[in-house]
Image (cartoon, rainbow, N blue to C red; front, top):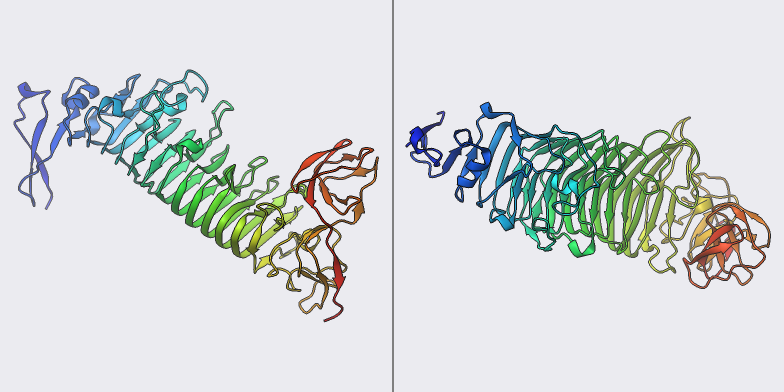
Length: 547
């Protein structure tokens, strides 16, 4: 049976008072208060008249609705905005469509069902007069709230700099409160700067979203992101979940950035034709099903997928990471700086560089203190490849101690694929890699940081190659000994007189005095070049013979 809404006490002389409705059909009575916004002199007047728990119904005949300069401010809690047939048009830069503030007394428990919020004015950028939060993009929102238990579903926005902002700030003052239990249903954003911006939220559920963009007008202050979490350690976000987010053409910046986030779980985060896939910065407790990036553009000096930060990431569990870069993109792909526990089921990477990247920064970089494992790592390096994989020295502070990579492949699968020479740049890791089938070289390695017990084949690669070399000490190897006034290339490994090993970070000419570093990881200058201390001792490799 089709339900009908029948108005009771609906005489015009009673307006603009709320209209009580009875539901006729399968149910005998509806106890909800429904307000027909079209019967009020203005949208704000209807909002002002709404008591707690009311539904504000916007008939489709009202569309489009012009949003005033200050936006529509909610004054009561637990309201439902039922506006699926409405296009709200914003013409003032930095203006929110719906504003739910604690200082107004109406920040909590709202449900937003909005057809479209569209910016129709002259677009500005992120800079300008400080407004709600910190800058115009904080105010130019479809929904802005610093409350709890708000639910935004089915919202579409076009041209709004920040479609949804869940903030810890109260109005223009930074009160630094924690928002609890806010939620998002299926939403869609285009022509945005920050799709979802959230600060100091916990117990949240960000549901599903489709985000697409081809515009970056951030004024050089901030790149675009489909999701951006927090900005400082003092605004950490807590426990939360994310469903399935899909992003297309996020042309400036990673599609997703999570900074200072604890205990985050997600289903899938995908990005197509975007600057980068995801960056986790100083996050702790990340668990997710899959990260998928296709046709990724250059992400500058950062990696397409990155786990890093000033506090490092901790305790990561990801089922699958896939990152495929556009042809000619000159960016590195994956960086794992993870302490504590890290478990990644599989990593699949495809690159096609136009020119060689610095071998000092490989396609995959792994660092971290604790226990880490990548079940399977496949690197398809087309075109001009970079160095494939680097693990740090377990003797360095926080440099890949306790990691295992049981399956690592960098194949040449067809005529356009260049096989990646892993062996030459093999850095230290657990002995699970050095099994005689992974590193296959014709002679003992000449450079790199190595760990005791690692082995190399003594002939050209083949399935049944015999193991011929064994590492008998931890440390670094270098085929070159430091000399004054000598040209060096970027990435070159040189041994100092007392056995310490440095790596040159830039090309140039050495000076007249040998460098004297004291701490592993220390950097410094030498003539016209710069160096990094890789190891305090030189390693030793001896032949095992044909076993």
